[in-house]
Length: 421
Image (cartoon, rainbow, N blue to C red; front, side, top):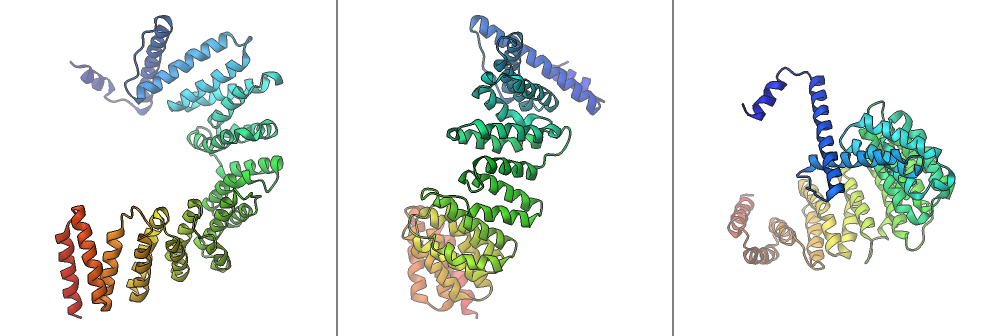
């Protein structure tokens, strides 16, 4: 009998609890084997790399376990290393989806960290706890997070801001996995982070930008629109140097987007004239991206003139990234115009899109938009203009090796359909 057959036979009639226990035992055996392999490497240098991701996780857990054992033996001599080893072991269990064990080791790591004398609370310890804090049980996480973040904001230099933000970004994802004893409240998490940071750095500090965006998004998810509006308005009032003007402008467009998304057009309309002034040569892509979202929101809400105005301004500036960014909204506007028999408006938009193509080095939709404009011209009776565009696209497709015969067949079909009118 093969090993596979024997295994299948042993598993017949297993309950889910029995299967879980068997898999846990197998994992423990694998970890023990990996520990032995790592110890062998330490003794004589022999080493074989893990073959797949599953083996990598087992090896990670084994290595963290060995480091923990060594740090525990030397705990009294080097408590910071013990704290770091605890947090790394918690992380290894978390990666292996053993969340209860991860929570248990992380609880001990946090407790031991707070026992450290002030001179031993070095940056390595704080960083290790901060990176893995989301592995605490949900019932403990919020209080511990607030304690640690207050300490970090009071003591940590702003030069390592990226490390703080990366932690703030990863902690919610960790907590969403740690569902062993409760529910993670993302809204409360971001609110407390904003409160702590604004108290430490001032309510208009530019470093609040990312946190306010996350908080506003979460408020929307929980249908608290008044609080979401407060967050997005707050973003527009943060201190901004000339270098950070991009963020301020993007924040204003984001606020207008919020209003448009929730049909508050009486609030978004007065903002549009200022937002249009942001669209000029060299406009940062972050601002363009927000404006494209806004124009799309307007189009979906049948506020076509506002959407058209934004898209037209971006097309006038031109450039590969800008033109590519508005392609989907151009398509939506042209479809809306043609469906409502507003062919002149559809033609006007496509003409702007074709002209913008001349500012691009690599416009993947150049042929399609010209062909679309050619078809509209044909429908409007502008035969000479239509034929000129069509012949140009035909040559382009032929040079690219694309299906010219299909294009010709569709053209013939359109001409016949228009003659029947």
